[in-house]
Length: 281
Image 1 (cartoon, rainbow, N blue to C red):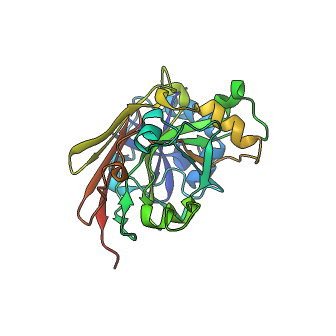
Image 2 (cartoon, helix red, strand yellow; image 1 turned 60 degrees about the vertical axis):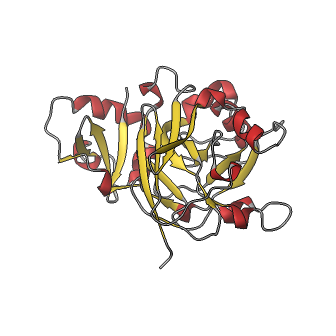
Image 3 (cartoon, rainbow, N blue to C red; image 1 turned 135 degrees about the vertical axis):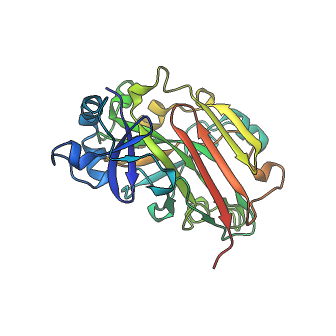
């Protein structure tokens, strides 16, 4: 059964249409109010959502109240060069295995949170984000989707000046400034999609389309990424995987974010992030 999970000012809520339903209340207290508890109990959320059809919502859906649907993941894992056209625009050969880096969880913010620009060459990267729901070590690709709690939208904001300051490139720090990981607006169960491996993804900057693709253009699919990552580390509920970005990033044309810019990131069937760029205080 399908569900859409939101983090409403720190409380887990199910989204049905334009309504929000407090999960702790509507699970009769079985699931705590913390969104992390909801991720762990993701297999129960579809049944609860189905029981709410036709009932009055607790509140109207308001994106400005939303925080990251997974607020405190143990791990935030990034994948570089995972779209063929992005590798081409970077002038790099296709990777033969996933290029993996970390984003520190402290970079995460909600779907309408401001991005505080900290570098001199800050870039946008629209990404599908996978939320692990059932942990495991050495998960085979054939079973990987059953370990996914849901999918959400992410922006992997990247300070290119930090990333490429010294050889070899330092990905993690340049991608982990506070506010450099907008995610949301909701986490959507995998069964809500007819083809979860083939979703339209786009990014606009100030209303101009900069990225457009489909997640089926990934070099390494979601199951392949989960198999690869879990061969090294145990994945746990709530871990996030930023799965890579398609062509159209700013560094390809030497254009970078500046205060006042608005980044709009959309993935089919999930929703939209709208993040304004601001100067450091």
